[in-house]
Image (tube, rainbow, N blue to C red; front, side, top):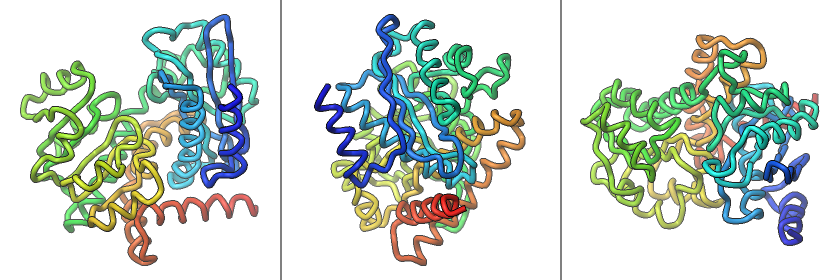
Length: 360
């Protein structure tokens, strides 16, 4: 555990990925809970971000993920125009094996102990029903069911926002926001990806999918037999004639191995932290692949859960999520003006908003 702590301290105080305000290590031996809550920034307001429940290879990997994800939430919330900073939590373990009511209640008590500095919601491995349990111990919980005063599944607006970002990318690249006749590859058709597939098909796109879970693929193909299935992600990104690649699973999809073989002209997906390391955004630009920054286009979900804190209205949220189209176009314009990749342009805009908030 000493190595984990040393790694946290180095990241927090010495690395470019640091700057976090607070990191909380949580343990409840009775329930088996081991969790990390990372608050990157509260410059714009209380930190807001989901809870990921995942069987990490090590505690160090879990801490690193919490730090990266929470930092990304600061930028996402800033670009979405929300009055929230960035935070994220991870629960270590296989949710299929260790998730229990006792564990979720213990986790809720830890979040509550932060007194509203961090507002939690769903993420990979956690669902609306889980947030209903957490909320029994913590009032700073969103993503709850409508029966319990919440907005329900945020995946709906996450997918809608990604679709708007994809339309903006098509507008920028081809001069037309429609995806009709475009071949789109979706990697990951779980909570968000399957809704995205529906939007794409309704707009007339040709869709190819892949997922590590056979049941997720089968749910798509049973409903939409016209959807093609790629053997795996490596097969998908090499698909001939692919126009758009949509990573919708875990992060790191764009890396030194995948970028050189991508056939798509546009990358626009729901996954967080798609760029495996700094410099990948330049590699994409060098190959003339247009990258729609992940934390911009996948902000529909956080727009929804933030609205829940003020009395949820779906139409109001959808209207806000629709603005992702304009925000994405503005980022592409800023990138062109500044001569930088879109990811760097989005960072500049987000950092400017956070800096202005700190000066107030």
